[in-house]
Length: 97
Ligand SMILES: [Ca+2]
View 1: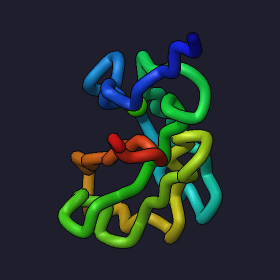
View 2: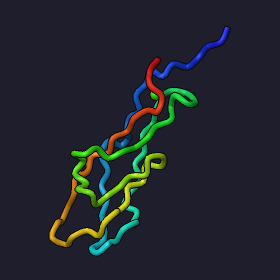
View 3: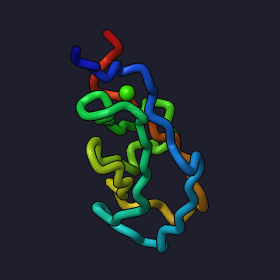
């Protein structure tokens, strides 16, 4: 009998909030922080992808690497804005069957 892992766990961020300081004038490609979500499933069922939803607050100035979770600056930040609150989404690649 084969016991197959079901994709029954959603990935979760830990910690749920990250804080990072970006120096003024940081340009495109500046690595801000890496976020990590873990998924309790095994193998392919634990593969996650990161994304920035439209309402993430990133305002086109940040991007996230879908596979590594690295958030980086994608457009030079204006010095007038002192802080950003950005929401990163994580999803499991394989959906529950
Ligand atoms: Ca999963």
